[in-house]
Image (cartoon, rainbow, N blue to C red; front, top):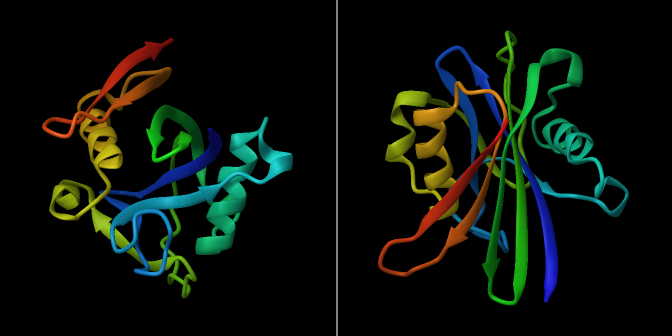
Length: 161
């Protein structure tokens, strides 16, 4: 089985979050809305924070000094086809709402946080955001394992303090 390590960031500006509508040409989640992020490079395997900052800069142009409170919030594992995916999801905020550059991954857009449920997202991300809306103000990291029961997929959460 192959391992795939992925980072993502939810960058907030007041009551909005930066999201991306993934291109239909993408291998993973084509045409769906997602947070900014991507695969970890081999030299980043032990440093998902560095991978998160690199992906944010590559896809949006945001520099580390333009964000605050970068925090690891979620680690989610799931099996997809013959790969084990591990997602490291961060949150951060910015006071700077920049003009968004063209992105080779898809279309970047600021989305109102109270309208996120209107956007088609991969099920694991949708479940994570639902959990974040209920528990996101707690300190610590949530670790989750995706149960891909076709009738009712869910994530089993454990809170690490």
